[in-house]
Length: 315
Image (cartoon, rainbow, N blue to C red):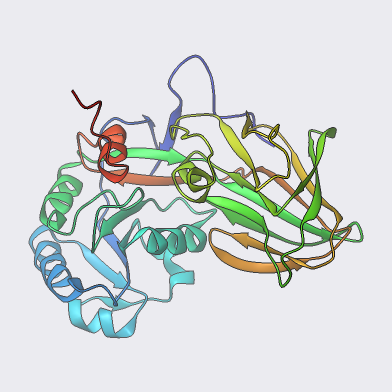
């Protein structure tokens, strides 16, 4: 496992063969753009028309995973599993769910993602639907900013046999099920027992995912540059349980110590496995990060204020 992406100095992210300090403009020669679209959004047709015009203007080649979208924007049809070898940038057009879908498909590649929201501004879709022309102009001029995010690697075990491993950009949640009866989950960090919790479940979130399910469950907001993961116990049957933040170099283990039901393992909002008594999951930082491209001057705190309706104190 590589060393954590943390130091006393700003870390550097490798992009298209260039080492660029995080949060500063990149020198871009990207011409091949992959397009991933949630076609259910109301302004999809209008935004795609603008994308086609701007791509022609700047000489970008478009590739779409959907054959119908490819025809509509004059793009080449390309299955998403071929994006890592063929495209240099992916546009995830829709909501945060579209970005999570793109992140999973591109995990392990060097393809950055730009999230374009076809509705209200999201935490991951930082480019508004009226800013497509601005975004492609910034891409052509090389003035986009890059933000690299940690990804969780979740391994699933049953009877001490590893069943699978999945990446998560936002969070991993173990809980719920067919019964409302509580369960007992054991938590260990780097092999050291932390505690045994009677609860409804447990979640581990990245800084990127800290503004999602974790925030709703009372967890802290972690800045994307934070080198750590948040751990929340869901509805603990004690007032002494509080959210925990651990280094991103930690090995986190959650074991189902006692359960009268199978629990559902949800990764980035997708139900993946049912985990019974004795099953466990192991969570580490993935050696692969996901890079997001953002407009010049993008402000994380401005997005927080808008999405969380921060207005300050009333006089």
